[in-house]
Length: 245
Image 1 (cartoon, one colour):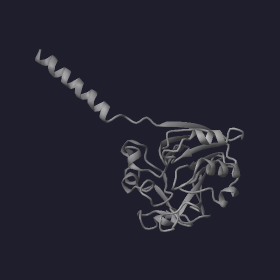
Image 2 (cartoon, helix red, strand yellow):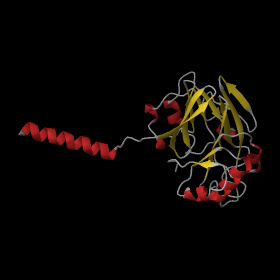
Image 3 (tube, rainbow, N blue to C red):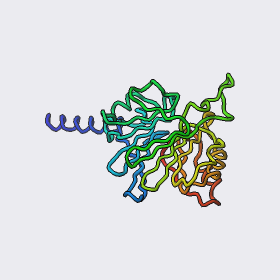
Image 4 (cartoon, rainbow, N blue to C red):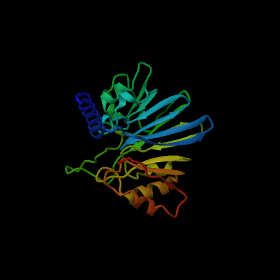
């Protein structure tokens, strides 16, 4: 009887642990490219992981979104800006090795050892990957002191090219004029939370300015993403909702 009681206690402990520490299941989508499949994993909020050509690209890895000790090591890490929900040194250390290349925005200069700063408009190639830094900033939404939440020239969005596919990860931005100059974007990630980035209407207007084939709202906080779906229902843009609050 004693052994049965111990066994029951063990299973109760296992059950309780599973409830308090659930394993997070990440959604992912796969796209075909000229160099094979490209898989995007939606970690959460502004955090993404891209896998293609036996290489891994992490974007804005943040520990509050995942246990990065259990995720694939990075060949390339892209950081959009210095805010805590985008730059996490501990997360970066968990997925880095001596060969990992870390790309930073101007606002992250000096914050990460051996990071490479790409200014808005600059572009570099890393093997089969081409990375271009594009502007990300506020025009309208500002702090109580009148300063924008994201100042022009500080942060980056990134256009990531691999195997003929072009992915735009906008970072924290509004629907700025530079967005309309983007060309041939296959997949776009646009932020949608106030007061820091955009309303659904602003995201819709921004998307219409460059017409990506697939649009993912991300970094969307408590904003209802269905509003964006409704705003773009009469366009050829495919809006896909993933768990990116």
